Image (tube, rainbow, N blue to C red; front, side, top):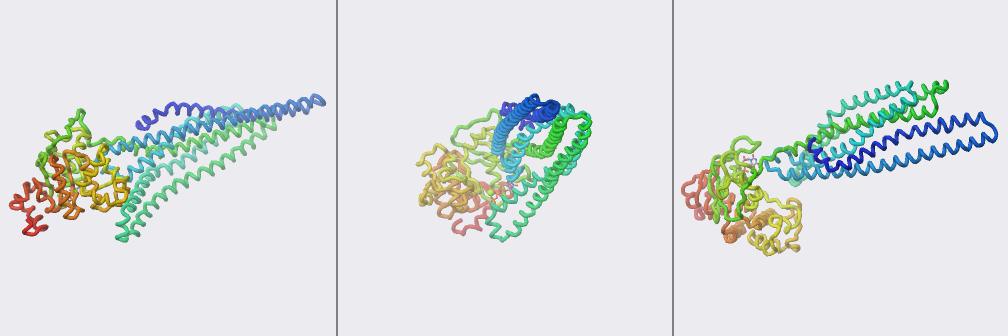
Length: 592
Ligand code: TTP
Ligand code: MG
């Protein structure tokens, strides 16, 4: 709740003015029946009696007076009604402004919080759930605020005011109101107990629906290739059916309320007229008062009805509030020290010192006792079978995760002591799965370095062997890139991602299996260009192909999370069994 409170704060003036207008609206609503009863009691009943008793000219002037009275009082009613309309409009306007504004702020806060998440936090929430939390859950909160404020202020005023006014008009009929209120409360309680338990369920079902839809849409190609449309359809159908059933249940119950209330609202006036008729005949009650009484009893029931709406909405919104708080309260695992060290963007030596690592949600150590030094001006290659922990290892340098034991240091400074921005400024990183953002080639490249000139950009693309295919395109650097970069080939995507990293002109480069989609000759040209142009940089290359790493200054051979060999190609081929196996499976005797 504290997050919501914090977000409401800027809207306090709006909130207060909304409350004031709502109070005015309630007051006007209470005044109206009273004026109406005057028309009937005085304007019709009193004057008619007087006119009946008078005669001739007196009667004529009384008739005129009666007409005037009715017109003036009617005009009063009209004014009140128009004023009520204006006030209602104002309330709607203020509430809409407040609600949408608050929702926007809240969404922004959640979004920036999510942006600060590291992989560890992303593992905790699913992407689908994060999306629902930023959209649907915020919407629930927005609804609660706008409707809630209205109800919390308006309904009690209306209810209490209605009771007071009704008691004034006809105290002897109070039991009718009491009875109708009891019936309304009973109805609310039944609906409440049936519907509320489903709300939490509905919110999780939206997550699930979102997840299934996202998965089968983003993996559409795979679904088609394996002809699993039917399976996916059934999966979606199941999720959607479950959602539908619960929603239907809740809505059916809720929609029962409408007709039942209408029934009550129509029965009560009949009862009132029935009882009042006798009192009127006995001159214990005025007709106008009875009419006002009917309206007040309607107001009282309406107030309870509104409160019931809140009772239903509130638990639902609370579920959403909690889901939002869960995101906002998540403590980032990767945090900065108070006075972080800032290293100059200069030569960097990366060292692993007895590093062990376990994934936050995983079991068992993925990396065990890793120690090595990657020196500036050198290429350090990491090779090993799939799943041996290469990606996990390089991810520790950029602090996508933190080490469990040991330390990763840059120029002797623990990466955990550095400012995150500084750390990441030092590193040009090409992930194993190259991801481009929607936009153009230019916007993707510039995301790494806003200040880079066109010449620098072209140079980076030349190094990454991307220049040629980019310049063959009609739009060149303004070639549009679709979401995820799916409209360029895998190899092209990799090369744009490499160019993007090179654009940073950072002292450390990490290429996680980044040449896998390139043919041998491009691979060779690219590595040569890297060596020539980034001669001072610390380059760490994760690779699968011996051919592409055999000329590295240092090769680290990994197996099941451990380092099993370290050295140059020549040394390893002599002494390291695992390396020999990999090398002989890929190269001919002469090549080795
Ligand atoms: P990786 O570090 O991804 O292994 P790798 O990069 O050597 O493999 P590849 O050549 O295929 O790219 O994974 C090592 C282990 O860590 C593996 O058992 C899976 C596990 N793991 C997680 O539990 N969570 C993760 O986010 C990742 C990336 C890996
Ligand atoms: Mg990997």
